[in-house]
Amino acid sequence: MAQAITQRELRNDSGEIMRRLDHGETFIVTRNGTPVGELTPMRRHRFVSTDAVMAMFRNAPAVDLERFRSDLDAVATQESAPRG
Figure 1 (cartoon, rainbow, N blue to C red):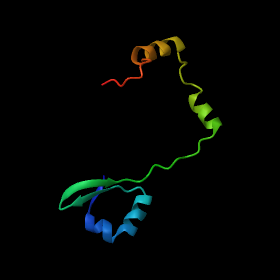
Figure 2: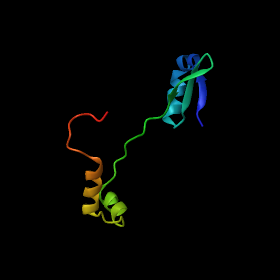
Figure 3: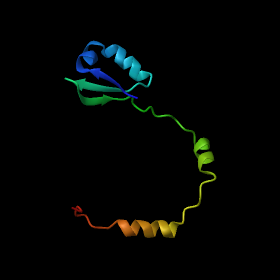
């Protein structure tokens, strides 16, 4: 659950808030009692080895390429004009 903090708390305690963001906390910033923004930790990219990826997909169902192409053709066109 995100903790509500005021604009003033963000300004005055930014160092502490940044440390808490590093530890995974989320904040809702308010101004005059009204929520105006949300501070959430960035998702950190993790390296996943090829072996790990292969193991994850080893038991995945096979893709029916004809059905996949048919599904794509049903929703995609070659038109360059925006659909509006």
